[in-house]
Image 1 (cartoon, rainbow, N blue to C red):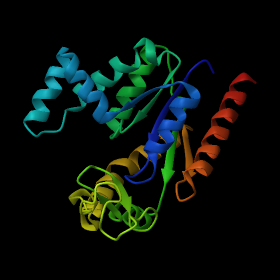
Image 2 (spheres, one colour; image 1 turned 180 degrees about the vertical axis):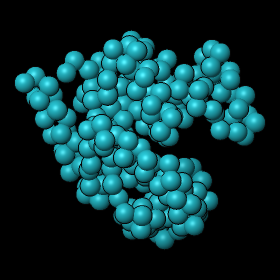
Image 3 (tube, helix red, strand yellow; image 1 turned 90 degrees about the vertical axis):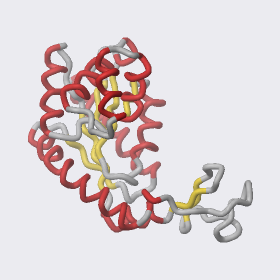
Image 4 (cartoon, rainbow, N blue to C red; image 1 turned 60 degrees about the vertical axis):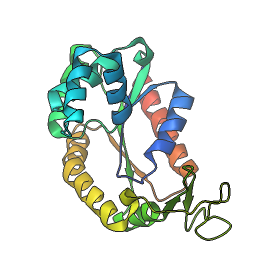
Length: 223
């Protein structure tokens, strides 16, 4: 297995960012999160970036064909030669099929799709428990509370709950995730690419499981 091409799937609050940081550090793969890759494309000013910028400024979703073009261009860069990690893409079956075709056209394939699974109520607890200071410091009412309730330890400002972190908003986000991602889970499971991980375990336990899974895949590839 000369390259490690991965997709990270999971609902908001599942810990994808933490696992992505560790994967990038240990395996030296290029990391592409949807928001970051869009901003980079817009900044570069290439044609696809300009198209994406126009849609975003109009408050519209970036169409599949534009998003797919941006992602395929990114993963063909030298930095992704030894592998990549996609987070937030694909979101639909159409995007997954286009990615598959694009990789195939360049003689590349996906290594695995890593799915972090966490029950909805645990995700609501995790996300809705976040509190943020005026300076951007993040706390959690259960796992990382401030010394004085409702007050930042560093700057003394009042801690607030962001609109995106309110329980009703989190549940709406999860509904969208399930509607969009459930078909992708089946899509990749049918192709033998899906690997499931228990996201309720500690970040270190989850990562150890991911690392062991990737080591097994690499070993199988050499046999």
